[in-house]
Amino acid sequence: MRYAIVIEKGQTSYGAYVPDLPGCVAVGETIEEVRELIHEAIEFHLEGLIEDGLSVPEPISTCEYVETH
Image (cartoon, rainbow, N blue to C red):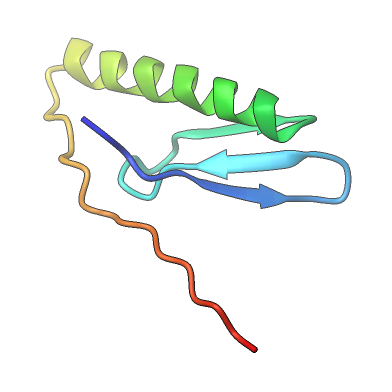
């Protein structure tokens, strides 16, 4: 499965979250670090859902960019 992630730059770090997996978040000092951490967080989150006998949400979010002038 392929989940969309959102990465946001804060004052001192980067944060990431997964719109299709509420509560699945990560924070890192660099974009590279937060990408790695959110990947691990997704795997951990999905494993927890399965262990708890809950269904794994299908990825439904997509990402788009809009250019402005």
